[in-house]
Amino acid sequence: MNPFDGLAWTNRFAGLGPDFFTELPAQGLPDPHWVAQSPDCAQLLGLPADWTARPEALAALSGNGAWPGMQPLASVYSGHQFGVWAGQLGDGRALWLGELDTPSGPQELQLKGGGLTPYSRRGDGRAVLRSSIREFLCSEAMAALGVPTTRALCITGSRLPVIRETVETAAVVTRVAPSFIRFGHFEHFAHHDQLDALRRLADWFIAHHAPECANDPEPAVALLRKVSLQTADLIAHWQAVGFCHGVMNTDNMSMLGLTLDYGPFGFMDAFDPGHVCNHSDDRGRYAYARQPAVGFWNLHALAQAFVPLLEGEQEAVGERLLEAVEAYRERFASQMLGRLRAKLGLEGEDAGDQALADDFLKLMAASSADFTITFRRLSRAPTNPEPLRDMFIDREAIDAWLARWRARVTPGAEARMLAVNPAVVLRNHLAEGAIRAAQQNDFTETARLLKVLGRPFDEPAVPSDAALPPDWASTLEVSCSS
Image (cartoon, rainbow, N blue to C red; front, side, top):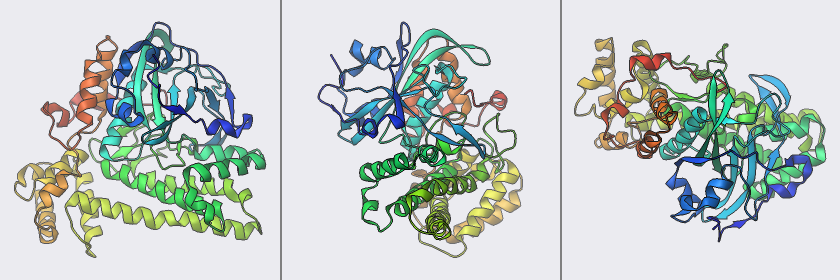
């Protein structure tokens, strides 16, 4: 029985026409098996409680057939990769299944790892178990942290060999979002002078995902401003939880302000503003401290793609679009300061708050203090400052800072801070533990970790989940093959 019975497939994106995609079936996994499922994501979609017990679910979500209403397709887009125009890209290993009308509103489903598409370039269209577990766990962990993100419904696996640096096994992640439209979709049609398609895409996106922009005298400008504000909110949230994306190319930037495409990523252990999580990023373009500026750069690339959507002299058009992008600066600064105030337990606003936050981060960087643990210990500093002091080499400096902080902080700060400073994030070594067990056909650690990450602000039952990383974690690397 189809577990999606009773849910309507709307498939609005498919109505845009063949300029935007290629229809094709998935290349299914042979002898698939379940690896993991997210009950929270299943609830978001309105799936029945027994959905994983239905054979049709395993088959369809491994690429072995489709249910009535599904319309598998791969979309085309282009983009800038590491700051350089990369030309045509597209869904090289992702396959759009369709759009469900769910209790949470329309949600698109994609299979990541469903085989070759016309946009696979030199790839094989497959995903491996290792990277699939990382994407699955991080998608759901970010949602629990409150960070805007695509979601992950499940992973299916197979013994099918896939060659990366070594021979690995194949897997498919079913990921979920209201839309998977990227900056790169607009860049593609603008770059190739497909202006009718560009206008159709803009009109479609505004109608379905930004209807408030339709009444603006210049809907495209209103849309760009909306995307700029959402992107600022997203990156401020990344910075506040110590998250590094790794590949902030324009084709990996969501038009809805969602965290999109979990390839190489990482939550920082020791705080280092110059931390680079992607071993392939040898120039450090996407270092932690550079993420806000890269987001701004990417919005300028999107603005360039929007130029044909406006009428008038090109210089005047450019000024109106740049003004929309400039909204990012103020929004990011205010969002970042607001999140830092919350992490420090500060109520209201004070002129010295920015300096107080900046000085704390400088002290953390000087001592390579663990990002997550330091803020968690700060949450308890009103009553027990000693564990926090142990994170810093210069005790006099942190004591002087604590004196300034105590003069600013208000009663009830501990409870407020514990609600925004997580105890547990998906550190690389935690993901690696789940991966190594799964490679031995033991998926219990993936399921256990999913539950822990689903309650990130609670102290975990296993203390090591919230402890400093083991020494061997420093040898772990993630790259564009991850």
